[in-house]
Length: 268
Image (tube, rainbow, N blue to C red):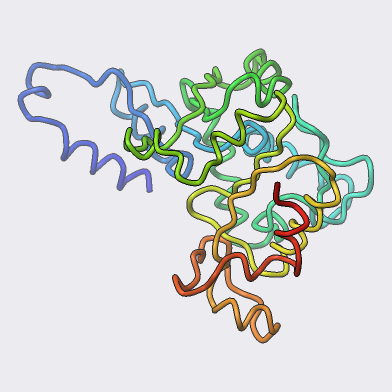
């Protein structure tokens, strides 16, 4: 990856700029391309910055994954899911049970785990980390990570959102904005799994029951489940594929995956 990043960067550099000895102001890279940070260092006077589009909880986990990995060895624990209480503690974040960590971290012998561990180590080589969050959402994590002396400077630059067409933004065809404006401040739970992910029917119904039992107002973005079809999942003939397999068939009605009567019991 490092060699590929170095080669790609040099090919895209303008020959005239190289002849005049000019350097880029910085080289940003995404969270899945830590090799670009090393490529920036090799380029000379080009600081490498990391753009982390997720939240600070995940960033804190990635930065401290090497330490967590090493801590399992003297304890004689094979996997994070085997950790007893007290649970994994990340600076500025709520405690997390080892069993609740990402699935990709639950097999320390896998290539995927080693890939995550490698990136966690390389993140510390960045000159700074730009994170898609802001203080009001993660105040404890922002304060802790921005003050940490042993990690690169962290810059909360969120929310980084998709730019919508002005006409679509002002139309509010769904009425969601008007409904939100009518609710008391801080009273609504907003649930969205992002633009690229979806969960199977069983997990969607579990989430629905939890929201209903909470007794709180909520605004939930419900997406079609991963393939296969809703019929197969409702009938338990196939539980569905991965999170990023999402979208299902456009012929599927996403409301069919909710528990019976859920809409009638919770609509206003």
